[in-house]
Length: 64
Image (cartoon, rainbow, N blue to C red; front, side):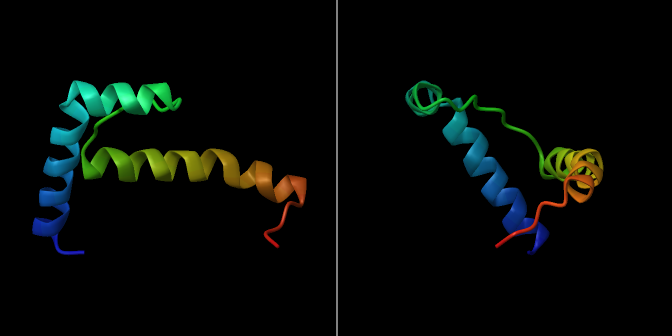
């Protein structure tokens, strides 16, 4: 995806999450709003993949 598009989507998401009504609605559904940058999200996904991939492989779990 073009970096300009990513930046625009991220800005819109941050604006939405800053709205108390949106944030409150998310919290009522068990979601804690956590705005971040695209780089932070990429790092989080990479870290979670590194952490959980060995566990998944060891468990023998598969996708049906």
